[in-house]
Image (cartoon, rainbow, N blue to C red):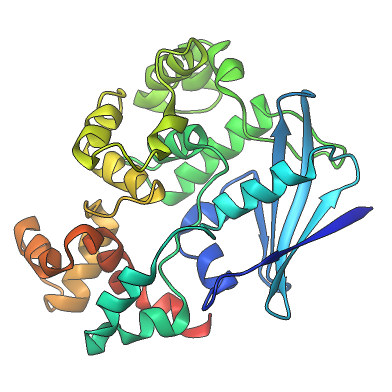
Length: 295
């Protein structure tokens, strides 16, 4: 059984475009039902030590949140969905910038630009590490194993994303042999231990007062996080001044803007320089334009 809560969506908000903005919706403990356009997530209630199910969909212009009846703190789940869908993120300046270029007019018209994220920065950081130097299928496999092996089980049998404390209790061999994390295995251990012991607190990275360069330095100090990982995570923190170039993004640029031929990264950077602090979001929208045709 479920209990319901409603959220007002910002003007021009596109639920499907936000959910499918990038691959996070395909990683546990998210589950997306495309036929019913419904996003489910298994939240961990640290206070009660339990995992609870919740899901969100769009009904007549409003966002319907359905929560497991065992949820005790409904407002917390509501706030986390606001965070996941970026409902409070100011994006009007980005839309105004895009509207000045005919080839980007579709961005505001379709409500693109909000990038789905996890309830916590820690989860986004771990998942970002799982995307480096590997295929998407391997990313999905690592995240699935992290959840199935270490997550707290809910009444439905699904599991939450593991906490830093739970991850820190396992050694490198577990991440290498069971999770199949490869070279990331010691990084998982060190990151989890650092967060569990309070040496770093990724949730503080959401503070808009931290200068972008200082924030990037803090992220780069995490072993396993290179320039791509830092730029990618910063996008999920609402900072878009990095392009987060990887093999997929480069290949898309070559195909769309360079007749399929490889080119130096500097050429890609010059192509989006005019977008300033929004260039990371501009390139992502540009390279994923075809995905928004049916959103």
